[in-house]
Structures are given as structure tokens and as C-alpha cells.
Amino acid sequence: MTQVVAMNGMTTHRANVIARRTGSEAMGIIKAQMIDLLKAKLQSGVAHFLYIKKDGSLREAWGTCAGNLMKATQNGRGLSGDQVNTVKYFDVEAGGYRSLRFENLVQVF
Image (cartoon, rainbow, N blue to C red; front, side):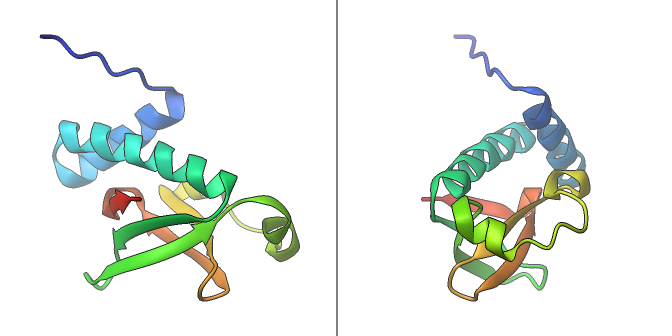
């Protein structure tokens, strides 16, 4: 059985970055699709997800990129997350911005 995966340009970019960093094309595709899901959930409200922090520990996070909260807290400087191969979000528990590297996403709930 042949399986076809449709990806847009940004998803393909993310998959290529992850594949380079992990050495696995399959992992690149899987995690790029997880990032698409995470970004959709972040845009629509508060998302619950897990990722590996820079120090190697596992981080459970609740974050958002939606609505008036983002407009009220953005300063308008800097690059978008995709330009630096990260997902940026507002951590609703800590009350500040955080980011995670594409390949470090573990699970989206």
C-alpha cells in the first residue's frame, strides 16, 4: 500500500530542517506535521504540548498565539519563529514568551 503525504511549502521546509538535524526523513515529516497541528491549536486558543528543553529535560507547556493576548504583549521586534527554525508561543502559566526547536516537539494533546 502506498501512502501519500501532502505538505505545503512551510511544512516541507520544517521537515527538511528536522531531517537534517535528526538524520531521519521520516522523523522530519512526522514532526513537521505535529508542528502544523501545534500551530493550528496555538492560533485557536490554548494548546497543551510536550517538548524537550535545551538542557534535555521534558517540558509540559500550555501556550497560545491567539487573539488579544498576543497583540497586547508583542513588541514587534525580532524574527518570526519559522525564520529561526523554532515555534514561538506565549506561555500562559509563566506569563512570558517561549520557543522550542522544531525537532524537540514530543507530543501535542
